[in-house]
Length: 108
Image (cartoon, rainbow, N blue to C red; front, side):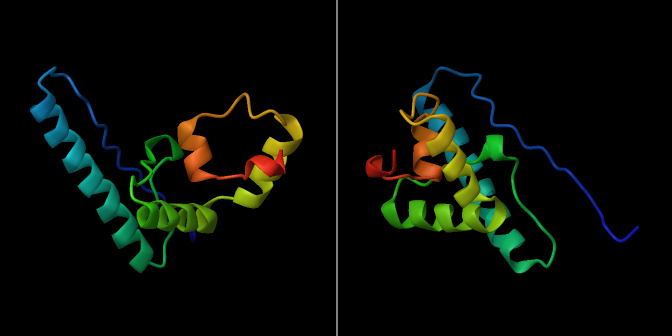
């Protein structure tokens, strides 16, 4: 067997209502996500978080970096072509999808 597969799951639980504690948990999860991308980018293997764990940066530069990273990992052009074909009014999308896989409104 030439391939090695390993899965490490880190789940961000927010069991408390205190906004300060929740922010601390969220900040640590953001640090973890950034570290996964940095380490994965230096490795010859394919290191990436599950698509359901993707957190898109709030800064424009970070968002562009996230989009470029996703485009290296996932078939974004195909995905967006299928979105245009199967969901021409963009009804099935949400903010995360639109930020991660942007399509100009004129594309619909």
